[in-house]
Amino acid sequence: MVSRPPDDRELVARAKRGDVAAYEDLVRAHQAIAFRVALVTGAGVGDAEEAVQDAFVKAYRALGRFREGVPFRPWLLAIVANEARNRRRSAGRRTALVDRAAQEPSSGGAAPSPEAAVLTRERREALVSGISRLRDDDREMLGCRFLLELSEEETATALGVPRGTVKSRTARALERLRAELGEDVG
Amino acid sequence: MSLDTELRALGAAMEWPATPDLAATVGARVVGSHRRRRVLGRRPLAAVALAVLVAVVAALAVPQARTAILRALGIGTVRIELVDELPPLAPRSDLSLLGATVTLAEARERFPGRLLVPDADMLGMPDEIRVLDAPAQVSYVWLEPTGVRLLASVISGRFVGSSFVKLVGPETTLDELTVDGRRALWITGEAHGFGLEGASGADFEELRLAGNALLVDDDGTTIRVEGDLTRDEAIRVARALR
Image (cartoon, rainbow over all chains, first blue to last red; front, side):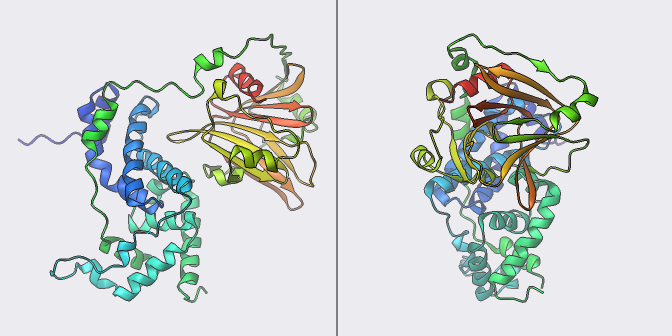
């Protein structure tokens, strides 16, 4: 019989009791999405790494206030987004949204992934360029909802807005992106 | 293909930078750590000089009676409006509502008259200073991982055609008091909105704070303190703005 891996709730409970190894497991489980949230929030790669590391440390120190039964991931991502924004502000700039997105996927000669094949290079470049010209809040919203495919609820928590606002802001951000792309916005 | 579908495809095709493995580093940083003393911890607050606080508490405890009294209530340039039912308040964590971030020197330059600033020895340095120009307001913000922990704002008494309005519902308790001779209002209970009312009506915002607020009329300038604070802590914060 294979034992099931501990879930977030169990790991959080152990971490609250001072089990650092359990917290390290939480870090491993969520560091990838945390890193990408920091990137779409406008931090450069180096800043994103620092932001995520600091966010995990702050989250650990705030575990005492973490409410039982609440999902850990969106709570963590809210801390990550705050950290990344603070770095973006103090740097006085925002990085182009993951410029790599416009590059040819480095498939090493292999066939491009089905997802990559859906969009032409020109279209990817246009989309990334359009997103990069959006306001910070629009870029964050589209980044979380579509590039990272966070749920509305997770996006709401991570960006600190009501769930209903996610819908309306997403719609407005899409409109503004269409305008940036020179497309008919109806 | 719809634009949102294209964006999902873009995300899936992205060449994301490799995620660094942070587990060991984070683990090392938190081992043996203790929760950091709060910037506004009890110790520095206790260090605030304990001058005698003249707090004349006039609790307006009868909900039915409050409407008539509080409709006319104002503290400095802030008007307090009691309403039977609060309109939907959009909880906001977007600090841009408080204006742009500035340095303390810029804040002093933009604020008409003498600007009250926090005593860093008592409160620690704020994480952010933000400024609005009309009406003039400087906000000192102390952050915690999930948002704002403490907000202390200084609002100019100069009338510029729009003013701040504090909107409170029937489940909110208001206590009138004086702090070192200055008229003050302590607001607790149900969340309350704080907004700017201009010619086109009021645009309310609510920062995600615990709901306790202290307003102090400092000779026309209004001090606003909000956060997860007891009344005495809020008073000490207000008194640490000098």
